[in-house]
View 1: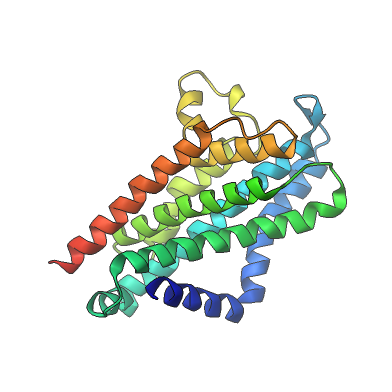
View 2 (view 1 turned 60 degrees about the horizontal axis):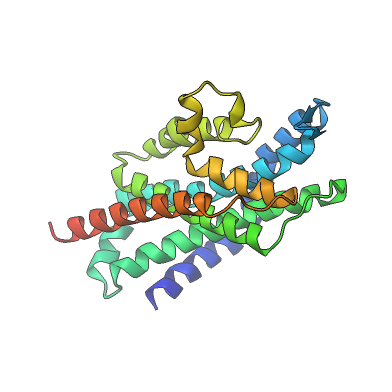
Length: 244
């Protein structure tokens, strides 16, 4: 019941701010598509650059939507509204609260990715997005929801959430196989960047979109490791705080 309660809260919030959430989800990715995809006429790996760009922007939108839905809201609720303290004294199991937050954030990220798919559908690029693509978007959203949740627990003030975005999310947005291939990066740095979750999500979604498959289980394993690590860190933090 705890998971359902949290998801219902997220749904009510989504309905209330539907237009704001939708506009926020589409503005930046749409600008990237117009400027880089249509304004710069070029090719990538022998294909129109737009075919390379769209899967990356979809994965990036999923990341931004999931992280943004959790990090800033949880920081505000924990530091100022003291909502986390109320959850701790309630009968709701804390692991259910965390799971509900992560799933809710992931669904918000999937919605952001779906908005981009709808916007690019009229272009008729021939890219394929199937059930496996949706699952990767969901898994990617869960990863960045757990990262956002963990960082919100570390925040000392409301302004820390935008800083986390600048330090973590923005660099990944530009480096992780979104606008250009990681093959162009220097050796060593290239391997490190390729192990970041957004790099793997972009590569898998792009491979499926171009009919090449997701590339095996390595990408899923990387995302699963990030999900497990940051999920356990979030659980550790919240239970430690409860037992103080």
